[in-house]
Amino acid sequence: MKVLMIGGTGFISSNVVKLLVEEGHDVSLVTRGKSKIELFDKNKVQFAYGDRHDKEFLNKLANENNYDVLYDMIAYTADESQMVVEIFGGKVPRLIHTSTISVYMVSDVVRNPIKEEDDKYPLMKFWERNPFGMQYGIDKRKCEDVLWKAHNEGKFEVSMIRAPYVCGPHDPMKRDYFWIQRVLDGKPLLIPGSGDFASQHVFVEDLAKAFVDLLKYDETKGKAYNISSGEIFSLNDYLDALCTLLDKNPERVNVDLEVFEKLPFSMSLEGHAFPFNTYRTAIFSIDKAKKDLNFKSTTFEKWMPGTIDWYLNVYKKPSVGYGDRSKEVEFVEKWKKYKRELIYKVT
Image 1 (cartoon, one colour):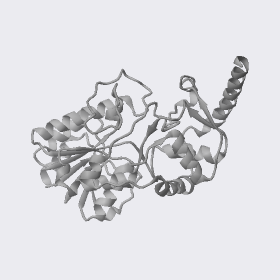
Image 2 (cartoon, rainbow, N blue to C red):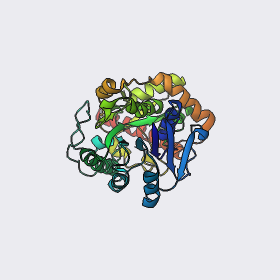
Image 3 (cartoon, rainbow, N blue to C red):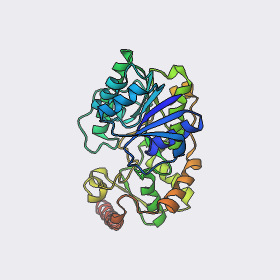
Image 4 (spheres, rainbow, N blue to C red):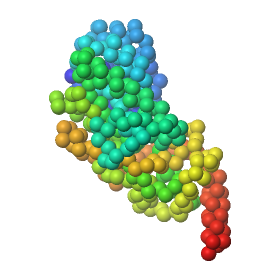
């Protein structure tokens, strides 16, 4: 197929492009040329350098080429999706949109397992610290609304993928490395709250395969799919598995959430601090993906060693907030002392 992708050099999209090329598709990328993550053979991909917000540039692409499918990997607002509808509607038969499980997790009601039709529950009161991204989830809902309307009006056939935490080598969010580096230094781990809320990850190569496999099955048209690992981890479960792989077992200290949220290092301008602390259980049904896409996920024990190796031997930089690691440890010791003294007073 002749494929146009808006984006294409990012973490997820690079893996999708690599697989599209391997499967013989003719791939062109709309990119500004600024991303350094490129996992595919550049000689087998065509590049259209420009900005996705440039109407004249996109109109030229739409009018001068006969694309079979458009992948939009980087639509974050309703306006961005609406522009795609206006420019490519009626010119490209199919659109595949990158959505997110955050469309569920901004809801006031979450019922597990979360199915694809559970995306319209009323919004919760705006929660700035929503670990799934409050404004992000709201905006992605609006993107979906625009695209489903276009689908229903016959502008093009739409498919969507909603993924949770995406992990693997080259991850720019570096969520796994936050815990990998702290486990390896052997010092106590600060665990926000109980660490018992369950959720899921997805290995980036599994996600990329799902994006490409959408092209193989007509029944995927007009549908959204949850794509996640079949494994369910709480933060505690995740750390158990990670510590086993790293052959380390540092002390873990649980800190009450209302206290944790007041700590200056509980958030970081560098990225996600204390990731996979979900505040609520979020388990996503992948039954539809198994049925329509024959989706199968790679186990943690298979994908994580390669991810660890990449961080330690290729990335080689500090993890998010690691400059405050001494403050984490200092607070943990104070918290342990406070808890001991409190127990002593009430017994």
